[in-house]
Image (tube, rainbow, N blue to C red; front, top):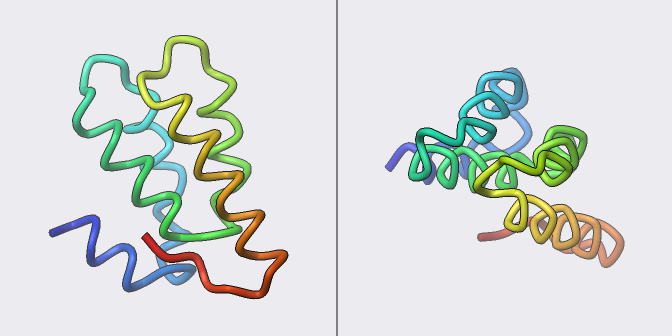
Length: 85
């Protein structure tokens, strides 16, 4: 449910990016890391720097998902389509 709410907020949820990035990088909490990464992607282009840092973190359990989400956000931004999950 929380992920859904953040996706509705989209860019308005940008103030939560630092906390979400922390959750996404926590290798101890795999489920929360996945949820945080998904929420960051729902925020959109403002979350790209955080998602890129997650993707570069070799011990992050969601690094592949973060990289995929960055690519999706960039593709959708270039095409003019809104980010949707």
